[in-house]
Length: 355
Figure 1 (cartoon, helix red, strand yellow):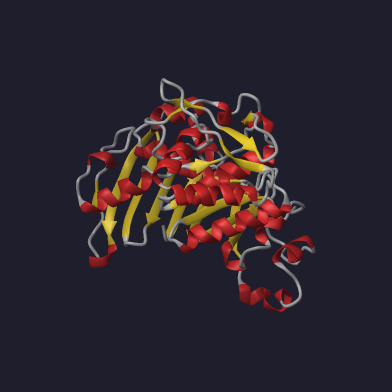
Figure 2 (figure 1 turned 90 degrees about the vertical axis):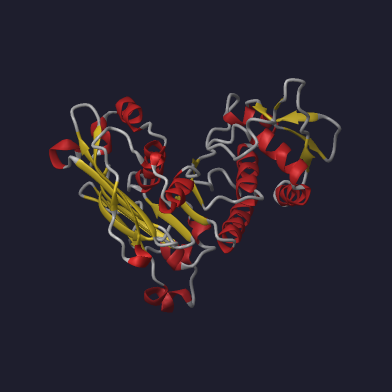
């Protein structure tokens, strides 16, 4: 995606944000980073024609900027690198949003927008057969916002998954990690071995995964240590290690999605693991996979260029997004790293003490 415009969504009053291969949002709690990432969940529900239920469960006013006393519409324009585009305008109805505009376009030939809105409560994008519709559909159906925060005893990582039904893509909370890894080990052993080596680089005791399906085709994520023959479960790993395993699989999977969206991937990671994570992010971006993530880690941003970083502040209830610029920081960067400038408040946007 080359650019995204959003109006009227949660703390985002109005946003026009060009996107790069790497887009790292950093800011205080409540600044609007998570609201921006949650918009991709919103897009997923639109594509899946599940918007009415999704909105009803959370409350329609929670999606509107400063509720319906200020805002009664949410609009979006998505600009893709192939010059395809998709846009919609949702107007608040009595109990749900109504599509008063839904359109597609192809800018190369300056064609007018093709209006497809049905003035109903769900998108009709899935029913379109034009080539531009296929491109937009293919993009939206693989939009997943990942978050690997839950590592407790009953976490998604502890769940069984099926080696036939759950092998196609990694689920948003990692609940099919066992089946997904099992498939990689069979179909792409070189990639699988690289995943093992990457995990060993931050967990030297790690020998490898013990992936053995049950008779019904279900599998749980298990592993072995270099120092014993015992087979261990997920809860025998530290929280940071299991999160790093999930991140490694996400960023090293053989068939990368067009975009990886992830919230606070650095959570619980050792600085060495954060440096490895930065390398993984750069690696997938170089392969054409766009990365959009939110973080609170100055350690993580220290590995990136200023243009990769977007600061987020909330001012009077409105999220303000600002991409850093190398030219304005050039003199400082001769002596300091990005995280140094952050800690010294020389980069003064996105700071936790912003008033």
